[in-house]
Structures are given as C-alpha cells and as structure tokens.
Length: 345
Image 1 (cartoon, rainbow, N blue to C red):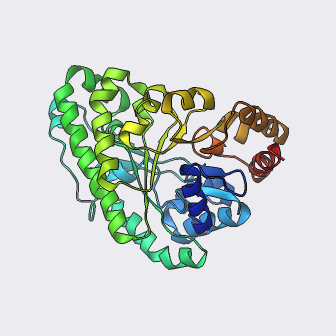
Image 2 (image 1 turned 30 degrees about the vertical axis):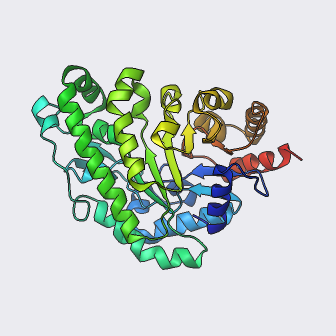
Image 3 (image 1 turned 120 degrees about the vertical axis):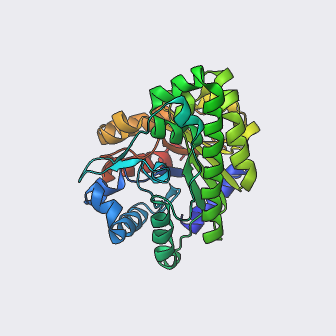
C-alpha cells in the first residue's frame, strides 16, 4: 500500500479528517488482469505481469487507497492448496480448488499444513520477497497480512453445501476442523508478519459467515475470528464479507475488527446502526451492476445516491460493496473518484 494512503487510513480509523474524502478499493485477480490487458493465467504465473498490473493501478489512480495493495494471491486456490486440494487452472477464467471428500471422518481428521513449505504459500512469500525493494522504491510497503477466513477455507476444502450440512449433523467434527484451519490461518499470517516487518494490519475475507444464523455464528465463527485478530492486535483489523452482513456487523467490535467491507445490499445507515460508531465502513456501490456494467452517468448517479444516505461521513471509505469487479473500466473508476471528490464542495 502507498505509504501516504496508509497514514490516511489510520487517520480515518481514528475518526480524524483527511485532506480529501477517502476512496479505497480491494483489488486482486478478478479485476487486475483484464484491466491490465493480460490473461488471468499470465497474471498468476508471471511475476512481472503481477507487479506491473499493481504498479499500473497505483499510477493510474494515485488518489485511491488500494487494499491490501500488491496482494500476491492465487485467487481462491491460495490457502486450500496447502491442504492438498487439486487445483484447476484455465487461460482466462478464475482458478478453483476441487473439494475433498466431505465425510465425518475426513472433516474430523483434517491436518494442519506447514505454511513454510506446503501448497502455493511458498510461492506467495517468494514473490513478495522478490519485489519488496521495488515496492519501496514506488513509495509502498506490504502493510497487510492476508488470508481467507476459516469458514471460507472450509467451504473450498469440503464444498459449501456439504460443510454447511456438516455444521448441522456433525457439529463437533466440523468445529474440530475449523479449529485446525484457524491454527493454520494464524500460522500463515504470522509467517507474513515475520517476513515483512512493515506489516501492521490483518485482512481476512470470509463471505460464508454471512450464510449462518446467529447461534451458528456464535459457535462456528465468533471464537475463531476473535482468536485470529487477538493474536496480532493489528493497527488495522480489516474484514471483508459481501454476503449478508447484519449478524457479522453486530460482533465486529467484540471480534476486534475496525475496518469492514460489506455488501451493497445493506445501507451505510443500517450497518452503522448495528456495528457502532467506532468501526470504519468500506462500501457500498453495487460492484457489478453499477461500477462494472453501468455507464459513467449511472456510476455518478449511484455514487451521489450512496453518499446522500450518510449523515456523518466520519469513518467512511467510499468504495463498492465488495472487491473491484471484473470489467470495471478506467472511465467508470475515475467517475467514481471525481464524484466523491466533488460531492462535498
């Protein structure tokens, strides 16, 4: 992340004013390859393409906070690969892990991988190390240790429907697997902290938490997220959940989360009322239907409508309700930025 933006991010989280209204986007492999003009496979396999795509975004949109910034990921395959899943790659489609057998025995006997040697994790660290000095010359540092969350990883390993069923019919075994995955996530984040001393934030992504009701959330999500964030006590505790987020929002402060990217299906007012005043909210323009598929005029109208719903713009980062979508154009992103900038003038 650009160092200036990191300082602005800290100000926003503290409730302080920044010079300009803050705009930020989660950018990664769903958007960057197409915007940069490469295939998805080339983005993953060629470090130069990965670096130039991220550097190009920083150059094209210098006023935008990119979260987490220079994210060295392999899509949804990154963390599941360490557990031995088969990975399916295509030239210009998103890769995916092939789920393991979801039997009670398989779930309960899940073993924790070695984050230093297993799956794609060493490739992530190697890429980050190789480009660390070039990032610094661009005024950036790795600021976040990043991972998918425990329930998200479990859904890739065993299948979303099958693991949801396991929570109901084999809750003890499912809880055991989630504890193993949580241990793994802590190891993975710890390794990133150890390798890159400028890291000061934790970024977790877990949409599957939005599929659970409150009792299951308290049993299968809450203790694991609390354990992860409390292990590091980061300056920025960032959580992404662009599925249903109302239950999640009510536990953000208890978990220790201070930065929340949520679904466009929820209004700022709705999430603010549940999450409280001390959580910084990141959202919430519809990513696909407006930011990617809309005309510039539609983006402008959508941003104005979004901003009009917010009575107090403290602890707000204007964004979309999710990560940057595929096919979001330079023109639409610049329209988003300019509309935010002009709204309060």
